[in-house]
Image (tube, rainbow, N blue to C red; front, side, top):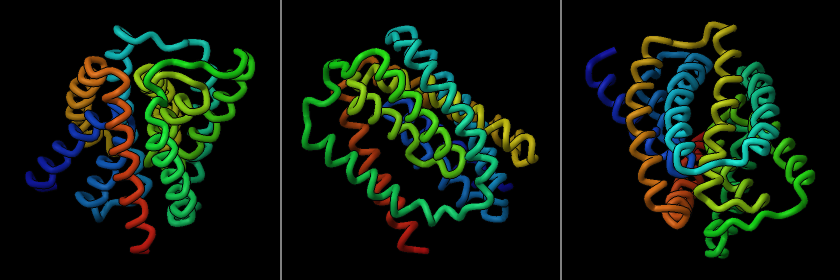
Length: 255
C-alpha cells in the first residue's frame, strides 16, 4: 500500500470518527474510503477491518459521553445484548447476500427518518419518555436485535437508526440518545468483529493503525456534541441522514 493511500485512509478514519461520535453515520465515510483505497481486497476483509476501526472509535466516544451524559444503563443492556447476537448472525451471513438487495429499503427508511425529524423541530430537544418501563424494554430489545443484524450484514447508517429509534420511539433527547447509541454500537461492532475474526477476514495491522485516527476524531466529535447539546446533534443527525440517502441511492442506481 502506497503512502498516498495510507494518508487518504487515515484522514477518512479521523473524519469518520468525528461524524460518528456526534450523530452516527461514520460508516458513510469509513467504508467507502476502504473500498476506494483497497479495491483489490475482498468485501468480507474490508468489512472486518472496518469493524476494528469502528469499535475503537465508538468506545472512545462512549467513554467521553459517559463522563458528562449518563445513559439509562438498564435500557442500554436490554438493547445491547440482542444487538450483539444479531450482529454475530448478520456478519456470518454477510457473504451470502449482495448489498444491493438492502439498498431500496434502506433508502426508504432513511427518507422517512429525515422527513420525520425535519418536520418535528421539537423532536429530541428535550427528553420525553414514552410507554411504561416494561414496554420500553421490549421495544429496545427488538430494535437492538434488528439493527444489530443489519450492522453485521450491511452496516451503513447503523448509528443513525439507533439514534432515531431512541429519540423518535423511546423519547430520549438527541444528546442522551447519541450517548446510548454509542454503547449499543460497541456491542454490534464486537459481535461482528468476532465473526469476521473466526473466518479470518480482518487486516489487523491496518485496522489498528486507522483506529488511532478514528479515536482522535471520535474524541473531538464527542466533546463538540456535549458542548453543543441536543440542538447541535439534531442538525448533524439531519445532515448525515441526507448524505446517507444520497450515497446509498447513488450506489443503488450505479448497480
